[in-house]
Length: 290
Image 1 (tube, helix red, strand yellow):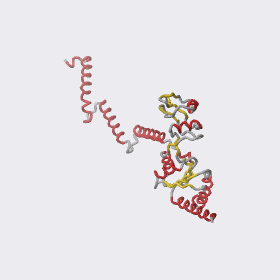
Image 2: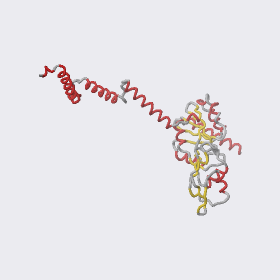
Image 3: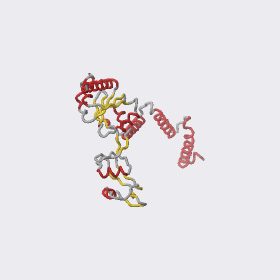
Image 4: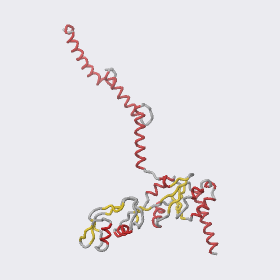
């Protein structure tokens, strides 16, 4: 009976997975390692209606994929990521939007021994609220400067106790926990995504600020080219016309062209040039003016 019940349960899971694979345009395989249930609950709650997250055994995931013809040519490539503990994310978002969404929803968590620092970890100056004792030696070993004041341990200055990428030691994890610090940002790490093609997780990493700067620079170059080469497009036509008008006025003014738009500038210049001409004539041919 237990075997039959187990088989029925697995069959239902496979059927549900098949339905989800067919219902959504994108799915991702993500690493479940060190992801706590409470973090998963927060993400599910925040994105209810946008994401469906399922935890299933790798063998059942593969069986579901094998039942869907569109995955046949990718099944072996997808299976490379079905190792360890995984969860599946189903969505109609594109893989890059999904990745950015999950990145924005990382949750601060306590550090455990052998965790890798996701950013520089700083222990701030101030009263720790801890009483002096054997723990002082651990502060010393971690090169955290302290003093005893009002019966408790005070940290005398901000200290970077771990750089991004450093492995957290047992002593550091203990100190951080006692200080109530949660320096590790925990979230769903995508191993691969599929939207018709298999996309490795590392290919989804986008530096938005970098791309914003590159797009801004590209727009500036395009505008300069359009204006300087006089290529009239909707975005630059007002600039081109304005520049042409200014250039035309400059030329008209220099040659003292009697046209309405430059008469105010031309008349004073004409008077000045007339006086200069008169002075030159009077020097060379004074009899004409006598």
